[in-house]
Image (cartoon, rainbow, N blue to C red; front, side):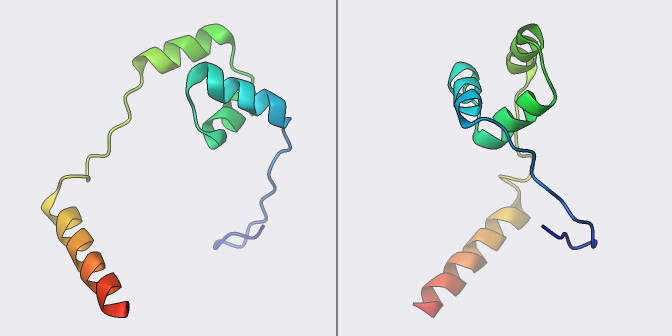
Length: 80
């Protein structure tokens, strides 16, 4: 796959069974599970990461974000 910057990227193949196991065991999505497998995290590292991380979107409740959502809704309803 070619990116906007002109670099070619290739996805590293991982076993689907292993990805599914990590997803279920640690309540992650597919992308996160593949990253963890490819970077060879230990079980101890995974537990410390999952206990300490809280991902929050700082832009979720800002006025700009909310007004953009409203504009998008208006635009989508006009297209129908």
